Amino acid sequence: MTSISGRGCAHGFAVGLLLAVSAVDVLSVGSTGQQVWPTVLVLLAGVGAILWPAARRPPWLTGQTRTATPALLSALYTAGSLLTGQKSLFGFGETAILLCLLFIAVRQCPPRMAVVCGALDGIALLATPVRYYHSLQGETLAFMMVGLVLVGLVAGSAAYLRSLDYRRTVAVVDTRREERLAIAADLHDFVAHHVTGILVQTQMARMMATTQPQELDPVLTGIERAAAEALASMRRTVGVLRDTGADTADHRPNGDLASIAQLTEGFAASGQKVTLHRAPDTDDLPHEVQAAAFRVVQEALTNVRRHAADATEIAISMHLGDGRLEVTVTDDGRGGAPLPVAAHGGGYGLVGLTERVCALGGEFTAEPRAEHGWQVRAWIPVGKH
Image (cartoon, rainbow, N blue to C red; front, side, top):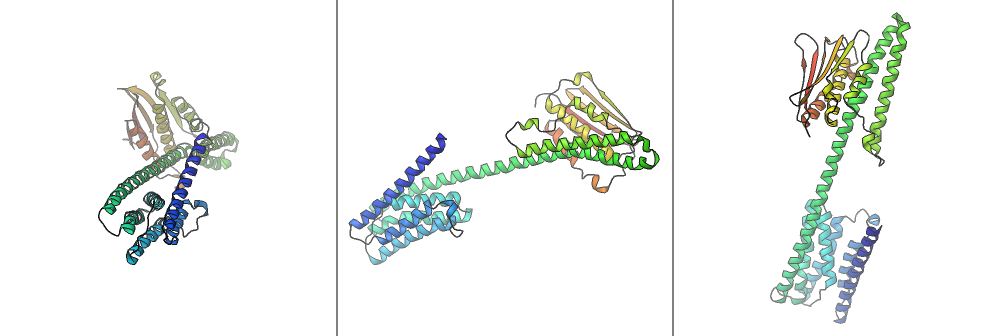
């Protein structure tokens, strides 16, 4: 609250100072007996362009119009004084207005128009001494040199702030892209896994409805559990999207080595056997290593359901060696996967796993086995990341 009120006071002081020096310009011109309306016109156009509230600006009052119009009026005023041979005063108010408009043009106008409008403001400012001295010597050159320094300082400051705005925008866009990719990975890794399980078990239920109706209950229980887990994963992901200020880490789907046992418990379909071999020395590993291992197993099992539903044996092993956690998932499927084409996936899971494992300095392979089936292997360093 204090900083907001401080900015408000500073803004009010700047506005008051600008109006005060503009009034001094009008009084100075009037005291010489010259017509004041050209000065008033230039100052009104400049003050209006600077102080017109953004929320109330009409569509035609663009940044280019705001910054170019007062500069053109000032330049016409100078040209008229030269043509008529009458000396006309220039003051601090007009100088301050043109510098403000130069700052706005360089920082806010589109790139090409920023150069054009900024040049107009700078030239109009540098030409104001000619209005009074009618020459390019002596005092005129001195005033021009001072004006050139001011133009350089203001334009340089505006360009620097514009570059900071651009970097901030790029950083925000990159951050949002990374968040979208992370959320997409969550949706694929967790929701797709559960939904694929629902598809497979639903197909089993349809086949058993006519042949083994008495054994339908366990299959329907599995469908119910997978649907509940999918909804829970969706809620956690939506919680991240809403970002209500709570700790988003509690909303993100979690995965560790202990969760792999839960993942494999309800995976096996009728006629399938899933074995898990996990070395005791893998209990205390960094969280990012455990999360990557969990995702490897999860994606491998999801691909078994999608592409090798006829697999009878699925083996998962995890052990440490040479400072790396080796995760291996193998199956003996022959490619029997009676799923709809839309449920086969687009290969994004393996790409995401490769990126995830390589980001930790590891290696990842997914390839057919010598006999039949498929093998997924990942080597993840367990050192500090």
